[in-house]
Length: 460
Image (cartoon, rainbow, N blue to C red; front, side, top):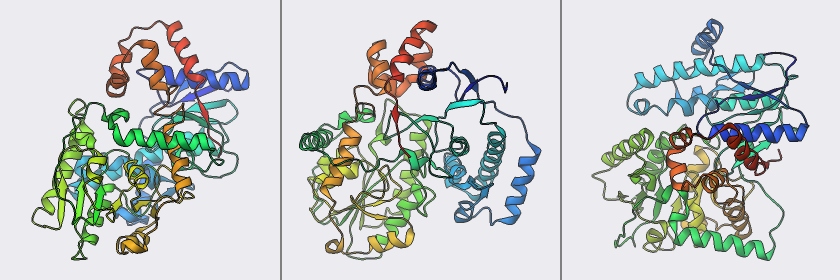
């Protein structure tokens, strides 16, 4: 890297949606510092013998192939396990046999060590800002290193749109530290009304959620009066530990643990609801095919147990909640469906590793298996209702922020409006469509400049 150049560092090449996102972040940074920057794309380095030796050392020093032990693996103070494990469980075969888990663990930890070593070597003085994508995976290490150097970081991810932050307080930052929704000033009456209206719309018009638009929901007329607990299933292979670690390395283990523990009480009747995206026929990518296979694996395990029911068809959440008793306990790991249940006055259990900060009093939440076990074995009467003001705050930030997923200035909406491409197409096939749009450079820069004005500052 040329020490005389002032660099805008990026983990992504200018292709697909990133031709707009990276340029938007760069333009935003240049305006902030009033200086032109040179784009530098992170290189994929060749085999690194030193990283390999570090890996061997870790393997011999740690009970490396234990799910719990690998979470404690660190290198120079950075948490390798936090970002390697989600990569490992993107591989469907790791759920099926130990040998695949071992091979994938070696591969992912080696890559994480290599990336970490190379990023640590980068000098702060000529990097003015950086765009880092997919911070829940190994790129989270890049964010941690550059943030510690107090370099402004641009990124994106649910529940936010494009954001940037500068680490001014914490020594080490993890993905959840800047992506989770945090406490804001008290909402006024108008904002509370907007929050209520937004969650009501989502409840009754599920197609408001972008990834639900092409799912054909069906009606169920079942009698669920005896159901005591509803468990919402999440993707098993996409974004594990998305918002942190709570003693579960993936949501497959979490789901299995939840069902097994609830069944120890013979009076419990558990309903397991598949995520609607499992039925996304217009978007059958590899991740969804794997999720469906793993869901069927879970169903097979409990096929002969009459105390567990599975919803294997896409039904709306309101359709389900209208058919269960109000004393049914709703359980989610980190999903937004739980907000609908809270608004409808259900008692809910969820992890602290979700997209809102643990400072909100929304659910009966847990931070490890011990506290989770305690919640699952509690009687309904001993569980708490949510704090309504906190619920409205989350709904307002999630659904009413013009810069985030549901907002009119969300980056996908901007591209949709300017290029006359439906939002649904951009969500499903953005890389394919945008690479073939044949836009001139001046048009890309014009669009990027417009998007740059919608980048949100997150205070750390």
